[in-house]
Length: 226
Image (cartoon, rainbow, N blue to C red; front, side, top):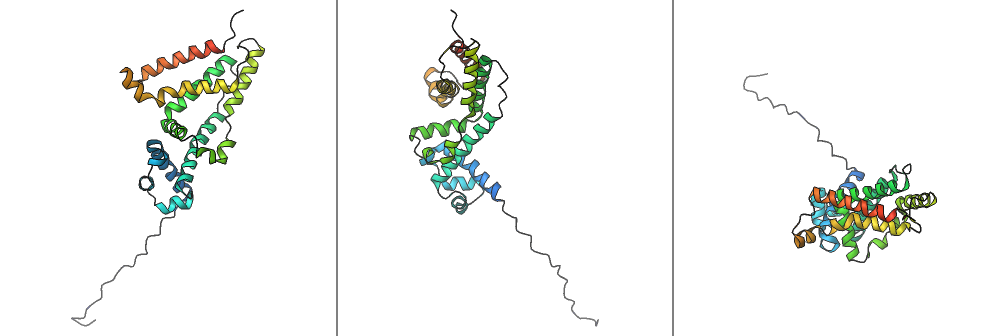
């Protein structure tokens, strides 16, 4: 090479970074989680798609691709929340217990689930305010009958047969009573705390309320002495 000749710099050719593959299952799950928080906090009318996609790290196009519309996304959130409850109910191992203990443990399960899933309480409260207008459009939710109702029926049948439980207990009324005792203090925590100047979210207050519920349920379930 002669003096003074210019040598072209060697440029290292680097391949373009491969595009990250979108995982449809994970994308859909992220949108559902973000939507659950948004709908629980703001209700259906107040929820905003732009906040959902921002939190999910997605875009509006994906909302409509996976769910079709805001109302269909909302119904999918309700289905997922109730589906999670049903899945946990199916894992309950209480059938071996005596009827009274089994019923009280079913109440404890409901109580713990709702206290640990406040967004579900808010979703159900909001949907009740709307007369379950969108919930009733779901075909899946009608298929998600709670296994707890069947468990309650079996406990009642065994308890009445061996004389432990009061006669004429109705499984659905028992279920609704348990849900009411599990939810009312949660769905009304702010108003009751202000009205009575007591913090109803305090763990000690909640532990005492649970103990009260145990005594109430046991007194209601037990066969009265002859």
